[in-house]
Length: 176
Picture 1 (cartoon, rainbow, N blue to C red):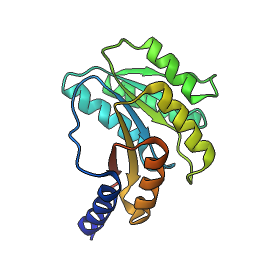
Picture 2 (picture 1 turned 90 degrees about the horizontal axis):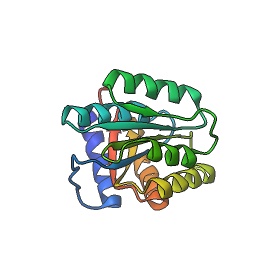
Picture 3 (picture 1 turned 90 degrees about the vertical axis):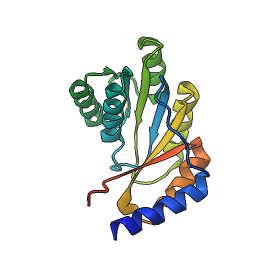
Picture 4 (picture 1 turned 180 degrees about the vertical axis):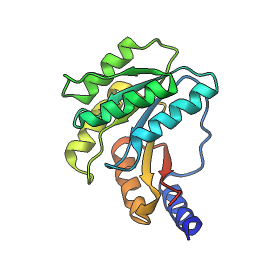
């Protein structure tokens, strides 16, 4: 059943985003987007570990300015992975956090930005993501989706793609 569900989600999202893309391991800027609880922060840590294993230095940026626990979680993951970390607990604007991170990190670093999620797609979330995207100018904008979303994932992917130009999708929680 799980394989069938993943295939349906894959086909739906591929129809929206187009052809498969090759993910290059070069220093790059990655923007992670998605709804609340989909696994963006954990995915940021897993991507950082993957890059580090391939010899690419990584910086994780905590751009979720709405949930202090997200900053703590990402900081713990960065420590565990052994990568650089940036957050600004006093800054209420996510795009300013990203701007400061870009200034603080060395230019050869792969940068992964973990953004805030919401329980639904709303104008405030989209506007914040668009501002972050404008500052970051990402090489990849990845939508993180819980595999249990089923066909609702297609609607979510379409909304995020329209708003911020999603270039790839990561399905999480495939283990049941």
